[in-house]
Length: 209
Image 1 (spheres, rainbow, N blue to C red):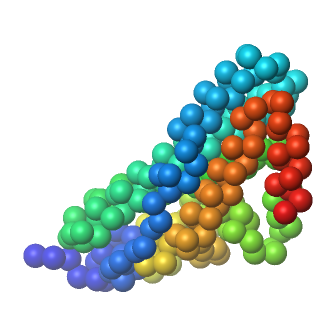
Image 2: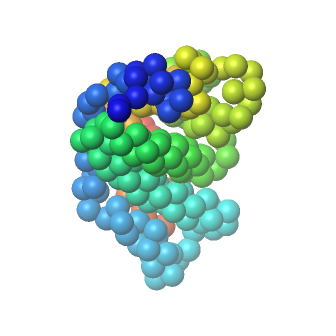
């Protein structure tokens, strides 16, 4: 016997009974080198003269986390669409939520490495996509604290959940389209830092847009 909407929303995930469809962009071909960014960076540093420390270490880890973010997104997208093909198999939803939380962590960490530990992406409470990425990551990372404070909805166990539009928490939301835009921007940054000979001019060009 299928569970009722009340049972699913309370014991599996907030609003899971309303999660019936999703349009999640395919980002597998955003950049033709996205599976090779880090290797390109390593080889270019060996062959063309390395970036100075700690810039080299920061960009290495930016690219490592960027590739991980793309991989986690692909797994999250696959698991989400698999769940939606048969919503009775709710463990697939939980698998998808795990991959989305991994994506949030890898993506935010990538931007932290690119910014070299400095707050350069947004001013608090001005609401851009990267601020909401940060808020969702923090809510997933510190769900234990949020739960202790009662900061969740419908007496449900997850603090970041899926909706037809994207990812939500009690404080922030990102649409699947916005998430794909974040990855596209990340890809442009990753492409720009692969070669130490051109990194300065390419980054300056991107930052001036």
